[in-house]
Image (cartoon, rainbow, N blue to C red):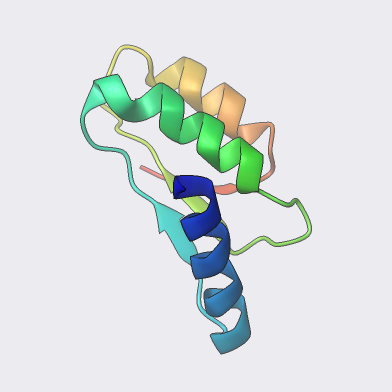
Length: 75
């Protein structure tokens, strides 16, 4: 359901010229959010952005993984 909702939101954002940013809060939910992002992320659409928490021990690993998708990352 989450993937379907993100796809619908992304399509609406594309239609209106907006971007979608997936925010990272609560460290235990970061891995599934990254998986959802990777599922929905199409490289041809640069307006999908990720925000990572800079103060977590795992952030460097998350950065490498998300950066490999070509998405914009906000700290």
